[in-house]
Amino acid sequence: MNLTIIPPSWTPMLTAALRIMTGLLFLEHGSGKLLHFPALPNVDQIPAMILYATGFLELIGGALITIGLFTRPVAFLLAGNMAVAYFMAHFPRSFFPAVNQGDAAILFCFVFLFFAAAGAGRWSVDNAVSTA
Image (cartoon, rainbow, N blue to C red; front, side, top):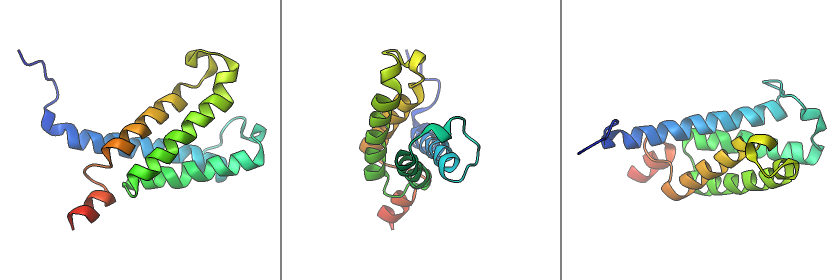
């Protein structure tokens, strides 16, 4: 009995949609830190060096993930960044992600690990370059 709701042929398009949305959401964190749009709460409490370093990674890394350029190495770097962010900023507050508000950092980390292994897929600069 086949319980497939979404046809497997949709996998490449949904993988691309996941990559694009992940990149855009990550980019938003960087633009909030560096460009103050959107205005993020408590940004003034982040030490300047960490603010600029993470903002740069989020803005540039998010843009590269969105367009699918250098996806594997960028995703690997961003997965590590999110793991460090989780253990520096969230884990000390509580063991439980729902309590320490680290859910997004963990989720970003594992989605980026997926893209580091799977690549950008369809609708990406990486794909366009490799098939040209």
